[in-house]
Amino acid sequence: MKPIRVVVWGENEHEHTDPTVRAIYPDGMHQTIADGIRELLPTADVSTATLQEADHGLSESRLAATDVLVWWGHCAHKKVEDRIVDRIQHRVLQGMGLIVLHSGHFAKIFKRMLGTSCALNWRDVGEIERLWVCNPGHPIAQGLPAYFELPREEMYGEPFGIPAPDEQVLISWFEGGEVFRSGCCWHRGNGKIFYFRPGHETYPTYFDANVRRVIANAVEWARPQGTWATVNECAHATDSPEEIVCKDV
Image 1 (cartoon, rainbow, N blue to C red):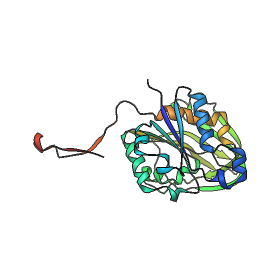
Image 2: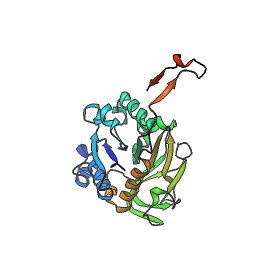
Image 3: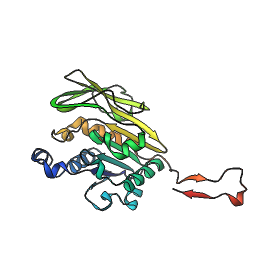
Image 4: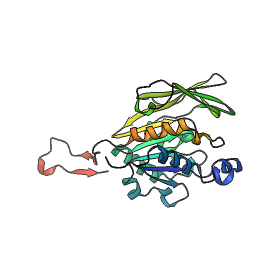
């Protein structure tokens, strides 16, 4: 099997404006996330892209050569150009995997793919998060304990405005008593989508071994399987063979 081609996309805004974030992630959150994938998937081809690059680092040719896109965004969702969102959506429907992290729940691409508000409740006081594995047989749960804890995280609470996941892998509990669907899977077209909750920028969450394991497992799970469709718009089957024309999207 060919190496998985992974692009880790980072908004890369907090790292330049918040000294706390810069101290935790001096090379950028996207680089730390990419390092975790490289550590656990040493044969993977892992690169990064940021909002500030031309085409946000996601040209058509680069996305065409991407098997899995990992996305972290927070304060600059509106700066992501719609034409890039269209481009990503097209590739997910073809078969590219999409892993959305933490406040990426409000990313344009995530809301586009799910078709719902993706709204939630939140509180940031740096409390304990316990993540329970509720589907231990799932590929994304492989190598994880029955639960693991993060000593300080931002709280996300239900209700979470998402369509019912096709598969639920993780559920979070917080000190205040809230629970949250923290590891959710969907299929859209030929592509797979995974949302993973932890990762507030002011905490060193992406250095945690279990968090890194979840992301690496999700990358393997979301990689394209087989050959994806490149055509989705054809003439009616009642047309004569000479008149049938298919259009790439």
